[in-house]
Amino acid sequence: MLKKKCLYPVAVPIGNFDDFTLRAIQTLKDADLIIGEERATTERILKRLQIQNKEIIILNEHNEKTEAKNILNYIVKQNYSAAMISEAGTPSVADPGAILINMFHQNNLSVIPIPGVSSIMTALMVAGNENYNASYKYVGFLSQKKEIRQKELKELNLEKIPIIILDTPYRMKPLLKDIKAICGNQKKIVFTYKLTQPEEFIIKSNITDVIAKTENLKKGEFVVIMLP
Image (cartoon, rainbow, N blue to C red; front, side):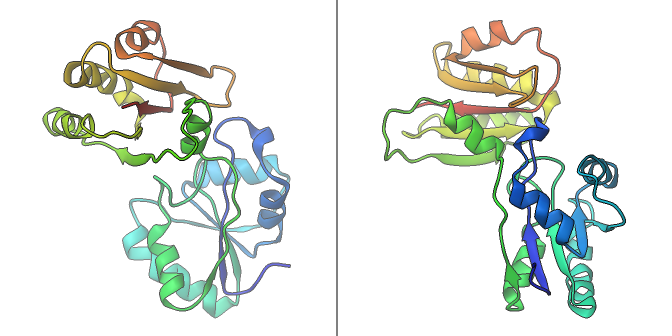
């Protein structure tokens, strides 16, 4: 039984639908309201889970600042339990949702996480760091502008811990080229592409080798871990 006037951020698969947890599926079935990032994706996920007749509200990067308060008020007024999902992975981690979550906290309303797949943690699983107590730095998306992005990489290259970087599929190759230009031909990275999907590709090598072996990859979701 889900709590009323409560927000449940629910992690969904990043590619392989079999990665859905039983708890996540049950939460989506029981929730009074589903908050999704995009309507088509949200409806597709619910249809595949054979969940029907759910009220759906869309919350994404384009409307979160203006709609988060309205959504909170609606949930409270209707005495709803609400499940929030992103298009893939974990809500509010490199995805919308943080503003709404903070509003729930500020109003002393419950937020209960339903954990599951995260592209960040999935990439770290194959990084092979032998230091069990190692720290990591997650920086998310770098600048869209090449000059600023290269400046950011120059600063990040001074770090003594692994750096986790995400970016949009169409900036995959420009990012790899910038890493080579700024960090050197032998900079070691972990590159993961389309994790959990049939086209999944994972390599841990120097940036020159990674660029050569990913040259023919089509645009797709990826994670880069720059190693110290």
